[in-house]
Structure formats: structure tokens, C-alpha cells
Amino acid sequence: MEKVKKIKAGDVRTASRLIRNLEDGVKEARSTIKHLFPLTGKAQVVGITGSPGAGKSTLVDGLVEQFRKRGKTVGVLAVDPTSPFTGGAILGDRIRMQRHAEDSGVFVRSLATRGALGGLAKAVGDAIHVMDVMGMDVILVETVGTGQQEVDIINHSHTVLVVLIPGMGDEIQAIKAGIMEIADVFVINKADREGSSKLRREIMAMLDMAPPETFASGWRPPIVRVENAFEPDSFGKSMEELTDTIAKHHEHLVAKDLLGSRIRRKAAVELHEAIRSCVLEPILNHLVAEGEIEGMIQKLMDKKTDPYTLAEEVARRFLKEGV
Amino acid sequence: MAERKLRVMVAKPGLDGHDRGARVLARCFRDAGFEVIYTGCHQTPEQIAAAAIQEDVDLVGLSCLSGAHRYLFPAVKKQLVERGADDIMVIGGGIIPDQDFQYLYDNGIKAIFTPGATLDSIVEWINNNVKPRE
Image (cartoon, rainbow over all chains, first blue to last red):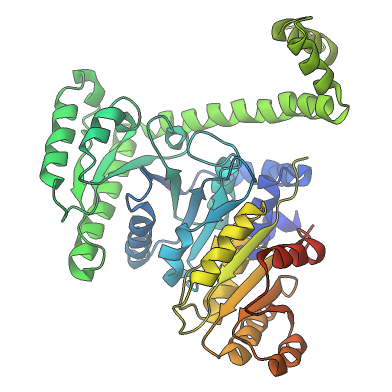
């Protein structure tokens, strides 16, 4: 296929177009992915997550520079939220990364969540495949500003960075259960601000309290401090340390044979998503297009039936073998 | 099939840090249901063209209040054409004298909006003239 050849050759125009078509749910794009899929699995994927304003985009920019210095090509997928009211979005992560715009070894693509709730966009999984086949050595995936439960990033990453900032002590308490559990590396960003040692102690305490089997493989999430990004020398040093830490984590995954379990997790999620988009979505689209859905909603409002009865009727109509 | 969504880039080329207008427009485009990529200030035409291609936008909206629009707007269009992306439409706005309009049109800028243009009129123009590319 001509497109596959172009993407393999690293053609940005073809790749960005394909990602667009994947976002828009164009059928033909799906068949291109079928051809790309066997070629994937080479890139190292690093997820970056944390609350809004924590400095994720600035860190991604710093990491891009480090990976480029080490001779790696870098893809960036930066996700920002879609308005639930208008469907519009402002994708502003790029502002922090524009100095790499002309570097042909860097490909930055912004994605809007378009209703996805897990902190990513639906097309992220496939967009990673596209960048992978383009030959990007490292793919950095930046989530939307996250709160507690947006942990989809673990399904797509080999290494997850959780970015925290001082002065949100109460929030540390609040996010202990969700996002704090998914970190392979903690970053205390803006660490020159007051409260960074307190934050460090809180993370240490939380890790100390974790059940012993949590770190059975021998990896306890390290904490990397990053100070003011406007001080290029010290910021550059922290970025070097962070890049080394990411590399160490990857080596650990390989040495302990853990990479497989992360790849398996991604495969399982992709299958789940694919079934949803091949089975559930066409049925829903059909019901909406035929106007049937409105009648069903009215029936529910009139209490003439219940959602389960309606769903079972739909299943009988559209699925040959009952489940 | 999901609906095609319009992707628009708002960019400020050259040495001009007055980005209030650009940010107001970005917000306005968001409210119109577009996906807006904002690049920030002080961008070279090369950076803008490269970013527009990486983001696969349908439209680039340039804002310039420094008086350098006669150089910068056509330079962005030229960069897009050179990179094989002549199908990405370019429009511009800012402090632009009437007598420069024709020159900009002749150099591939599809529309110019100056102070006094309403947000509604800009969105309406986009909705009438820009379709998400197939």
C-alpha cells in the first residue's frame, strides 16, 4: 500500500492526515492501520501525566531536547480537553514545544479528547502506532491535566511519569488512590517553590506504606526534582537526570521481563476498543440515524419499558448468536 | 462515520508580542466548535508551516500587528506550498491598510480581517469558505 510505504519512510503529511482520519473515524483509515499493525512495537512510549498547570508540556519540551541530544527521533502526542458544550477545543501544549517545529527528527501532534474520559483521546493508541511505524524511537504521550481517575495512560506507556508541584498538599491526599498508584517515576516540578521538601516527604511516606509486593520487581518509583525551567543550566541538568531515570526504568522492564506484561495490557485494551467500535458503535449509529433512539428514550420516560429490556431487544435484532 | 471536525491554527508570525487578539480568536473558534491549535508568539513562517502540516489543519489564521504583514503572510503561504501543502488555506488579520489587501490576495491570502471585524463575521466566513479536507 502506497500510504504504508510513505509512513514507513517517515512522511509527515501522510502520517498527520492518517491520524486525522483516525480521529474522525474514517473507515479507510482503519484498513491502513491493519497494514501498519504488524510493523509496530519498536518505539519506547513514555506517558506524562499530572494536574493542569503542573508543567507537563514544558517537561515534554525538555525531554525532547534530551532525547534529540542522544540521537533519538521523538514523536509527541499532546492531548487537551474538548468542550462538552461546543465540541471545540484549544490545543495549546504545542506553544511550549515550538522550538522543535523545524527539527525533522521531531513530530508533534495535538489531539482533543473528543469526549474520552480517561485523560487521553480515543485515537491515541492508533496514533502511537503511526508514529512507531514512522520510525520514532521515543514517543512521549502527554495527557490532559488530570485529577484522580484519568489513568488510561498506563494502557499505552512503557514508563509513566506523574508530575506534581508543591503547594497542593491537600490534593496529594485526594489523589493518593488514583493517579499516585500509576507512577513509575515521580517528578516534583517547580521544586524551587516553597513546599517541595514537604511534597517529597509525602510521596516517600506514601511509598513506604505501600504493601511490600508493590515493588516486588525491585523498582520503587524514584522522585526527580525539577526546578525553574527559565534557568537553562539547572533545568537542563534535571532533564538529563529525568531522561537517565526513564532509560533505567526501561532497562529494568527489559531485565525483569516486564515489558511483555505492559505490551499485553495495551493489546487487551486495543482489542476491547476495537470490539466497541466494530460492534457497538455501528448499532448505536444505526439506531440514531433511523431515529429509533428517540422513540426508545420516550418509552423510557413514559415508563413503558426499561433500559435492559430495550437493550436485550437490540441485541436479539443485531447479534446472530446471543451472549 | 464520525463527523469531520475543522482544525484551525492560530499563529503569530514575526516579532510581535501582542497576542490578545489571537487569543480572543482562539477562544472564539473553540466556541464555534473548531479544534484550535495555538502556536504562541514570535513564530517564523517556517515554524508555522511545519506545525500546520504536523497538525493537519484546514486553515491557518495569522495575526500581525507589527506592520510586517506584507512580508510575513505571503512567506507562510510560500512555505506551505514548498512543503506540498498548498491545500491549507491561509487568512490574516491585524493592522492592515486597505491598499495592502490586493497584494496579500495576490499572494495567496484568502481573506483579511481588520479591527472592527466582528467575531461572528469571521466565524461565518470560515464556515462558508473552509470545509474539512477530505
